[in-house]
Length: 336
Ligand code: UT7
Image (cartoon, rainbow, N blue to C red; front, side, top):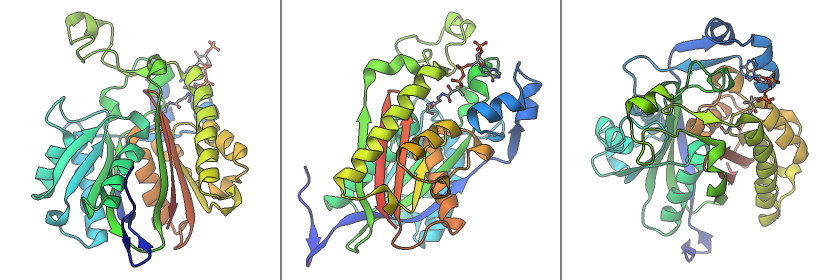
């Protein structure tokens, strides 16, 4: 437990000073997928809401996407890369098993004073990273932290498995998180895990449990596997619980939320959560029709688009929430 730091009677907390996002140029549409696996635009649209997703170029790795998003975020914040003290990259598709993608990103940005590390919390990764950044800022350890969610999921997608390959996309989002004594910023954040349900979504091969071998490759164990329908049900229940608890803990009614920024996995999951929170869909930001599920990148990309499109005004209460493999889930409440 960190003791609150104050200036006068004002509490030290973290706030997102600026955001940036990057989506690769190549678009893969549902029509393109119809030519690859036994699926249809109608099925994908009805079951997921996704129409198209972005695919990284041949030579593009996760740190390349992270770099593009980060340099925009830094420019918008008006700060130099050398002023960043820490870089946290949330990803499950790092450039290499090691070194960390954050180290590659630090080098590309020239963030010479920053310490960098990655965290793996699948689709909840950005909020996990924000939790770490917020704690370190509140504790007065750091003032400026770059928090990034970046994924090249197309490289771990089984393009022969119609139940998963229609879902995912590539992208990156970055946030410059800094200390503030103003009456706004990150008010509350909750992160959660339950490892007993790890089998619902995973990549079974390539780690120390099932090291890469001709057999793991033959069995396609280096690709994402998901029990979609079971995951769907747990996601809806968990997201409702974590969001309602976040509101109750902060004494807010859902009617006070200006915008819900959910992880962009499935439109039906998003609609079910909104309904359970009694939020009309006009108060929910959705962009999955264009990008699919970009895992750790989905929330910072969505938040960046929401801010840029004028959907977020100063003083608005924003609720962010995510769910993913692990299982992991998280929610955050911000006053913009
Ligand atoms: O990122 C965070 C974690 N991930 C999620 O939150 C994803 C959660 N799950 C989902 O979004 C949904 O479960 C899916 C979109 C993955 C699947 O939707 P569903 O309504 O749960 O479908 P289902 O898995 O129960 O499959 C229904 C049918 C099956 O056929 P039968 O057995 O009824 O004949 C599937 O084989 O749909 C079939 N199917 C497809 N058909 C056409 C599965 N994938 C496809 C496809 N095209 N791409």
